[in-house]
Amino acid sequence: MSRGSKAFDRGRHTHPLWFLAPAFAILLVFFFLPTVFNFVYAFTDWSSFHAEIRPVGTENFQDLIADGTLLRALRITLVYAVLVAILQNVFGFLLAVLLERDTTVNRIARVLMLVPVLMSALAVGYVFQALLKPTGSVNMVLGIDYAWLADPDWTILTVAVIHAWKWMGLSMLIYLAGLKTVPLELTEAARIDGASRWRLFWRIRFPLLAPAITFNVATALLGSMNGFDIVQATTGGGPARTTEILNIFIYRTFGQGLFAQATTMSLILFLMVALLAFPVIRFLRKREEIV
Amino acid sequence: MSDSRIWTRIQPVVTILLVAVVIGIPLWLVVVTAGKSRGEALTPDLTPPSDWRLLENLGTVWTEGRIPAAFVGSVLVVAPAVVGVLVLGSMAAWILARRSGRTAAVLYAVGISGIVLPPAVVTLVLLLRQLGLAGTATGMIGVYMGIYLSTVIFFVTGFVRTIPPSLEEAAQIDGAGPVRVFLRVVLPLLRPVLATATILICLYVWNDVFYAFFVVGGRLDTLPLNLFRVASAGLYLNNWHLIFAYVIMMSLPLIVVFAVAQRKIISGITSGAVK
Image (cartoon, rainbow over all chains, first blue to last red):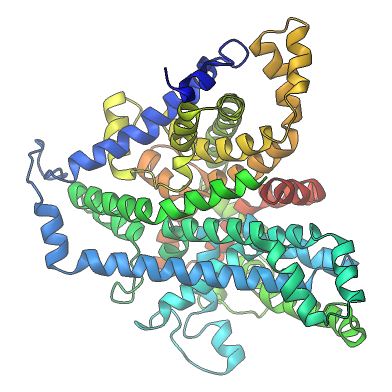
């Protein structure tokens, strides 16, 4: 018997394994089994047009690569995720610094910043679709007639800003909590040593925000890679499919009855996230060991 | 940085202006548009309606958007799913936190993998059909539990490790079995972290439309699904007044809960995320 399993055996009576069973049963049926199915049905011609399902090898992948859809959807999803992660954290961080002191104005402002977090992402999308219409209020206020949601080059940035707007309140809360954990003695000591405010902030307080940054960046990246609602409600993937992230593609092809294509893209999303996730998981676990 | 004297004077002004523009304008647009007639709301803008028809529009979406049925459907799915993930996730997390060795580490890695890995939505539909759960609330509850169990396991395992085992040992010496120790000693101590997890998971599940579309779309009414339906028809007809009336109806329950428990929720979210 290896040392590892002996250590595991200890606690058989006080912490029995059957406590794990219900959770892992649910995970197995509703999470891992469909994922295994993904690896099977991506290689078939499953669709709503015929009853039987036949294996077709890598045909689905070849088709998606040949017409450029695969690379494009991957690129769009990654660009969107990175934009959201950056914007959501910059907005959240700036808000936290702005609203750090416990004044009445700040307390009310923090609560109002959380309203978008509570709203459904779909609703947020419709609100901004209305605001950003060519004849909408944003253009009216700015006195321009820019088509915010119909520009093949920049609309993805606009949608990422909306996504960041929706979640910046949550990032702000996490950063506020992080700022509060910085011990007062530490900043006092640095101040006595004659550190400038700017140095004090970047050298002492900012590094101690590391756990907050980890949490915020990871959740923003993962949330946006699995995004759907905001893009669907603002552009539906357009203009000219330039904002068609993977989940929009999956939704559209599924609706057309092309189940195998949808499954193939779902598998690709899984593989992409899995590849990117290993460093993220390691990061999260390392953080926990410190705690 | 934030306590220089000029900044102390300017900061409240900056804050109020920022909130007014960034949060005020979008919310104002929702309220005034929901209060307009169809003709006035064709191109939504920030002008107040010439006469307020907010109640009338809310009444229209109440019936057309099948709000009562959707509300019941949402509650029916969200409540069991959230309670389920919290209880089953905490049970698993307790064992994973207290046992050591390679097996526990592997099981933990498997248990939290769902935080990052995306669910296979398309084949999920196929599997639910084979299980006879397609389009049912039970199927939807199972799917949400499968998606969010990992989040609970991650949060709670980290939290349990900060609780000294001596508290459990005292109960064990008194002859309490694992079920009693878990229910009487461990679960009450988990309150803060479970509060955080409840809030986050409620937010995600209550507002989810993507997974709901695949699993129960067209078979069960939930608030986000019906918003999607109303809006898809509404955009086609430019019924912005109805879309935003629905948005108000749908957001109200969460806003009310938040307004009542605002302080607890804020401390709940932050205490669990950053330790």
